[in-house]
Image (cartoon, rainbow, N blue to C red):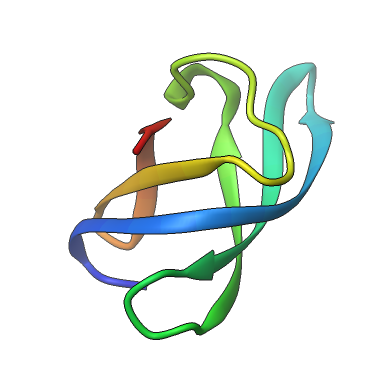
Length: 72
């Protein structure tokens, strides 16, 4: 994962989960730039709306953590 920047990815799978009552999403994604596959965990407040398998989204990173998920 980059320290800063963004990736355009295709979402392969989504798994919601909670830690101490806070909602998160586990996203299995494919990076469009190089075809690499990754697992990222995203806080629920970082998404612009529902995320589903097949969606093409932009992930924004800060310090190696996803800070925003928005439609690409």
